Amino acid sequence: MSALTSLSAKDIAAGVRRGDFSAEAVVKSHLDRIAAVDAKVRAYLCVLADSARAAARAVDAKRAAGKALGTLAGVPVALKDNICLAGAQATCGSRILEGYKAPYDATVTERLKAADAVVLGKTNLDEFAMGSSNENSAYFPTKNPWDLARVPGGSSGGSAAAVAARMAALALGSDTGGSIRQPAAFCGLVGLKPTYGAVSRYGLVAFASSLDQIGPLARSIDDAALALSVISGHDPKDSTSAPSPARDYLAESAGDLGGLRLGLPREYLEGGLEPDMQGALESGLDALKARGASVREVSMPHTRYALSVYYVIAPSEASSNLARFDGVRYGARRHGAGGSLLELYEETRGAGFGPEVKRRIMLGTYALSSGYYDAFYLKAQKVRTLIKGDFDAAFKDVDLLVTPTTPSAAFRFGEKTDDPLQMYLSDVFTLPCNLAGVGGVSVPAGKSAQGLPLGLQFMARPGEDHLLLRAARAVEAAGLFSGEPDL
Image (cartoon, rainbow, N blue to C red):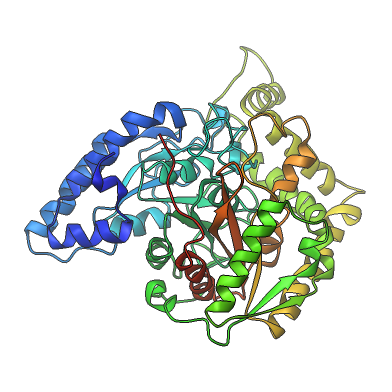
């Protein structure tokens, strides 16, 4: 493995700005790494080698001309394949968008380019971001670099695996119910779901619009903070974008934890934790206390309904959002000669969508249907308000909430595919955060007995993502997690 692929995004950008090495050399080292290991991991759906080299040469030319370089100068970044990059594929891991190329850049893509980052390629995901293991991709499953027999998490499993395997210095994913934080925990990374509205969703193919949020996956808090500084800030093209200016999260996340009040939600732990996860939680709490934070138990009584509420609201929004994929306007079309319009829809959607997407579309359509809307969707929205109220009440007494990120370490392929409920329970600690619209971060906090990464999660008030990173930095500094995958 090249020394350049071992560098952090922060160090790559600093080195390129100083002229210690060229952006082109950095990109070459990462493309070589992809060529060497991605046949085993399968993190990428496509690698954009030519455009990445061209972008790197442009960064080097900019420096040679004496121009100031951006925050992520020469940093190789991977994009989840539901985030638009002009001229590149945007399949969302689905056959129904096979061959589709995005006509424009997502706002986050524009901001990465403006910061002189280099996009290496598009990463694999559960189809339309619906899944917790990457096994729902229509193309192939991505493997966990720490153990190729285990899942990398989902839905942003390809992005997580690419960064963990040193095939990108940074990656962007999307998080609807834990799809950044859960794969980050499984792959030993920092995974940040910013406050809803902190990062523009323009150019993100929608799954559930009131829950989706783009965020970074990184190997360090510094790198996650740099990435968030670049991609966040108001965007008039997204009506849900918060009216907040760009912020320096690297600077704001510095500082000690003196006086910081942490809450441990009683209801998150009622069922008990696996011994390895309990140990990681206790070690993390000890590290936080040693750095000046206090920890108290809090109650969030409506947490027990979060999974049920999520699996009414998210499929309902998905049913609406995915109605546009009909074989008429864009994407794949499957239609026999002389057939009716209804047959066009049936054949295209029947062949184009996979089983999990069909399951959620049907669940959502049922919940929104006449006679059931009040009983399911409206009731779920009312309980969502109660769940948000729990967060609001807790944040009157504490500054951050701390929980495990996942119930366990990464599970084996096929272990949960026959039981959708068990798969859905993989996100039981992460999805309340999306329902409430607050920010959440997962940070590595130890390993299981099998040597697999375990993650600790923090959640903060809306707009206080810097506190998430500050607390996570303390866990990182405690050295509870170390090492890298042996590929």
